[in-house]
Length: 116
Image: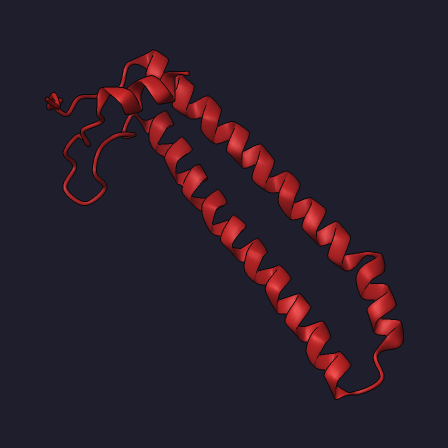
């Protein structure tokens, strides 16, 4: 039997746990972006630029660049969502639906997972 949970605000302990997880994810994402840019803007692209000889090589270079920037764009979107969540935590609005303003119900397993 599943218990239903009345929507409520998170405790300060729960909010702190969520905030810490968001900050850690933000740190990890920035590290990934920096590593990706460093890898692809470094030797790989310098060597590729030196060896481009025909249209096929140019297309390959563009494909690699587009793929890299698409991955970075996804990380940037996640970073924006994290910043938005952190801002809502600071304003005391985290856990409210941004459309209707009601509290979002969290099951106990999710609260416990966020509190770890």
